[in-house]
Image (cartoon, rainbow, N blue to C red):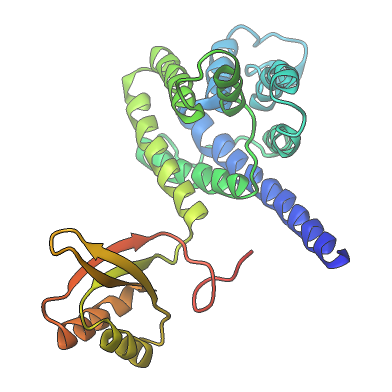
Length: 301
């Protein structure tokens, strides 16, 4: 029992560390790339960029120095999330908002700490690509910790729970983020918005890569009457485990044994050669496998 508690404690520490690092990476991308380039990619951070730009001329004579260039991003992100979390507490429950509250606070803190610096220097392509990499990398780490940074994620969850049950949270979030992007279009024009779309694409791909891992594998289904010979050769030449699945050919109405094997990408040619050598009439299906945990692949975390 004590060992289990120790493992759980280490996992929680690791998750909070991921949130800490992930929000820092996100904030760096926002402060040094998205904000200087006026790229609005959705979320409360995108809305904060719009608010800062619009309020800049209005607050240039403000007695508070930090507001003279517009309302800071960290302030807007924090202020917008306060009512959202209050509503979420009553609608979704306190268990839902635990790590997300930490993520929201850390993102606002990082936005306050990290200074604004113009990395892209008016190059919107660099802003879109590298902003997407930083944003996606940070989001991926936060999501790996089973958390979010609040914002439109939380708003979408509330709307889904209380008002629109026939759409899932991801679909609602896409609509909300789309509205934020349109607001960015109206404020900054078409050119930055088109590059923002590129940034969104890069962000999505990068976060998927962080979540699913870099080590892609291949899964192979093999249907053959010579399944025992094929299995032995795979054991011998590839040293991979194989699972035999009882199947039935609906056309021939005969019982079969279908083999399933997961191998590394570079091992697929060898696997095909083995099958062809034993049975040229074998039916082989090869598919992508995003993540494999267990002996011979990645350890369980």
